[in-house]
Length: 116
Length: 109
Image (cartoon, rainbow over all chains, first blue to last red; front, side, top):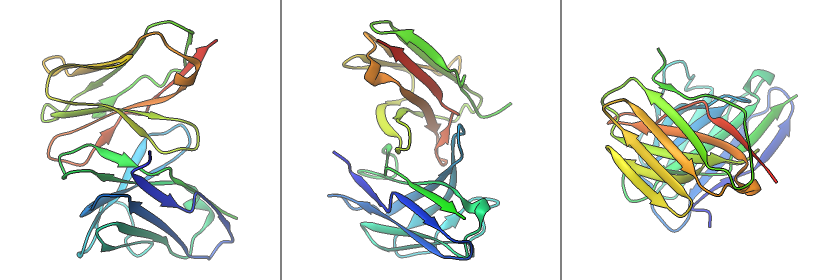
């Protein structure tokens, strides 16, 4: 069964709205989680690494004030897309490694965000 | 040259065929190699995980890593219509995971 749960699976909202996406590790603790963005027929693009109890590490070109990440517990990381615009519409996916950072990542089912 | 190259397909095969999926890479520091399967509108699902060179088999799936050639493969035996999905290779060293673009596979009944 799923080991990483992501919610919501689908969001449709108006431009200017802030949207929060939750990523939970099920039955394991994740000190590190990862947030990706995927465009149609494209590969996954790493946006940021979420670290429990400290600031997230953002990849080059990703606006930290636009994509707020909070990793307040060992089982929950949240991504908030602030003041979303149509160009933020995409498929957002989180992942977490089980058993340490050298272990393979397991992914949530993604959140499809559509900004009208 | 991109770090990871993967033919996007689409690849269409009849049910029961052996499928071969491949990726090449340029970074010799990569040591951990993975294959993920992604169904439409879902997150990637881990299929195979290999450290360094060698072969690994799990049921109908076999993963091969040739570090000298910087080439990895995934073989699917006795392919089924339920195998129809996009297959992503992924790899890393002491760096974030790097993905291929994915190969779209259709297995026709």
